[in-house]
Length: 239
Image (cartoon, rainbow, N blue to C red; front, side, top):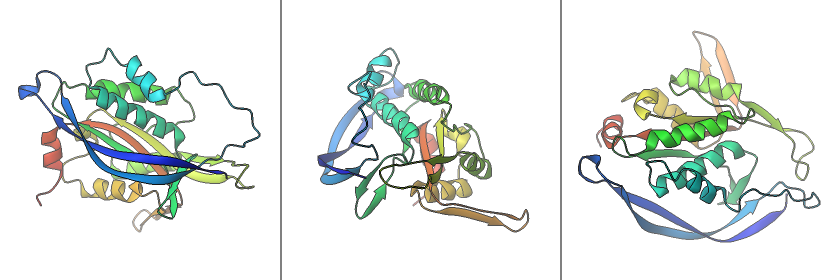
């Protein structure tokens, strides 16, 4: 596949500051972390005619579309990124640090109640449900049932500029309105499963009692979830 160098990627994080008792808007302070040159690997055939776009930027269009929602611009931008990642799956990637990195995003919107988290996860979930090819996970699931949803999302695609044979992977998109429903406090099995899947590497299980054995060579999980600081504090063990 042709490789196109991207000039500089600016990496930022944000510190959110809530008003007392969750009243008023949440302010965000941008913190610069790093700048890095990377290359993007693209699978499009250069001879193929380009497709017209409805918007110059999906993120900007999404922010405008959700302008009536009681959510910060920052959260709406991250929700748009989550929506894109859920559609891209392993169809595109960036090449950096000697390997391919896919849009395998775990995006959590952490803030006080009534800050506009659920409305965003619902909008993104509706967008995903509107695309029949997207495998959407249930909002409440055990570790085993979540992996079952991932196994059900088997995809085969052809990259004409790269491979002759189809490329196979498993993908699931999860829009979680409340992390407390999806993740129970100290649910070590689910946390371990999500941690393992986040790397996008080979994942497998073998259970002697039920004689279940499988391997997912190329898993892809994209998640947009909302939660409160108190739940996050209860979820993570001390230390």
